[in-house]
Length: 186
Image 1 (cartoon, rainbow, N blue to C red):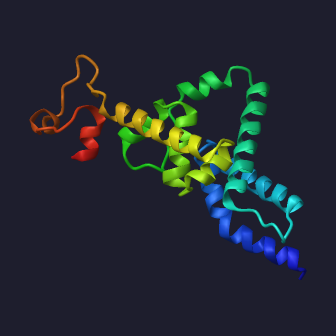
Image 2 (cartoon, one colour):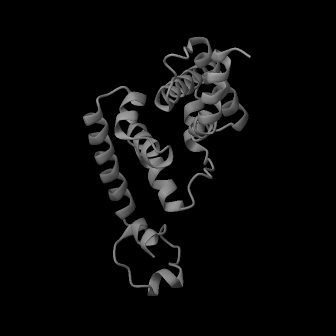
């Protein structure tokens, strides 16, 4: 077996799961996520040089570009699909906390992305900067702003729609904060 292939297989083994998880959180079809992940590694294989192996941020940036291309193509082919996707609730098994899921869905995509890259993908600010195409200081600033936005969304009062009763445990439990953040604390 040639050395180039062995070196690439090691990179594939080290990073395949992380790239797949990254894509699965962004694509609503699991099979499509697998295809995009393999497309990412196909591109990596074509550009691979054992003397300068790829790191995870390069792979995630490539995956990010592929996901973007996938959505742009899909939107062109099916007019109005964006409205349908936005109106359809999607399940996200990555997060256990419903309030956190809802808050993240309400965040702008750029803010949500840096939070996911930092907390779920485990990237440093320098690696995030590489993925999103900015300086490290800008990545830190984006991460800080995203955290503030998430805190604000989680602190918003989460009142039931008018006419619905408040569950007994919510009506009697003393709360330290308001909104969804109280559920995270409880």
